[in-house]
Amino acid sequence: MGQLARRLENDQYTIILDPQSSLATTIGQATDTKSKWFQSFADLIEEHKNNPIHALAFFVNLNVFKSDPKVLPSLKDTFPVCPVFVLTESSSEELTEAMALGADDFLLTPIEPSILKLRFLVRKAAIAKRASRDSVTVGDLTIDTVSRTVSSPKTSKFFSNIEIRLISLLAQNFGKVVTREALKAYGWPNLEVTDNALNRKLYEIRHRINILSSNVNIRTLYGVGFILEKMSLLDETA
Image (cartoon, rainbow, N blue to C red; front, side, top):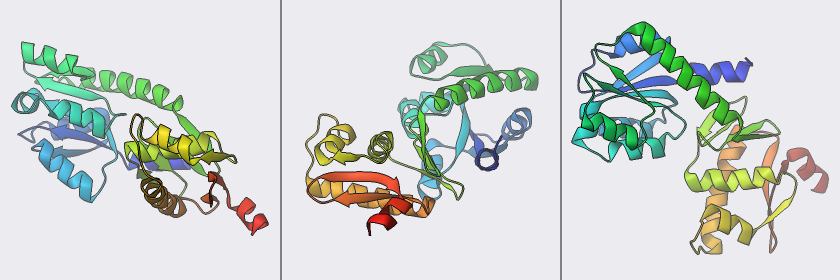
């Protein structure tokens, strides 16, 4: 494992959503990861907004889903790469519904650490395999469309759905011009957007890319489109 991969993994947490914090230590020890406990989904989202969380997996008490059916879809949308384990005392219709809505696995409580560890490793390996098929590397940047992250040796940042679509299209055409119309169609499927909206979004992406990388940049070709390229090329044409 490379230095960047090790650092990114060290920045990740298993997240426990449970009215009680009693399982947090057990889960952290069984998965051999750092863990964060949240009493509610609202608390998790509030912290994520202020300080983005690099989540590795979620362990969610079934009662959290029962109290708010929208939690699971929202969780999968916000953290699409992370497996979600449902914690429950017994099988029930609510568990069946949670699995149907997109939960990846479930664990009966009280938790047996050896079973938790095995099932966690299986899900982690499956996610890693999937992510390897959905990433592209350009220069010192790695764009992961599953986790919606762009990483470099410096750091890693989360991107919105629109942002990751735009930067991934530019990355897939690295060194080539991508027209405005192509970016609009790919970034906002089935929606009409203005040039100003595209310009604002690409300005935000360019700013974040410049924080991540010192040798890759987005250049504007006025009246034509945009190009993601190495800084050395920019220097040669300056």
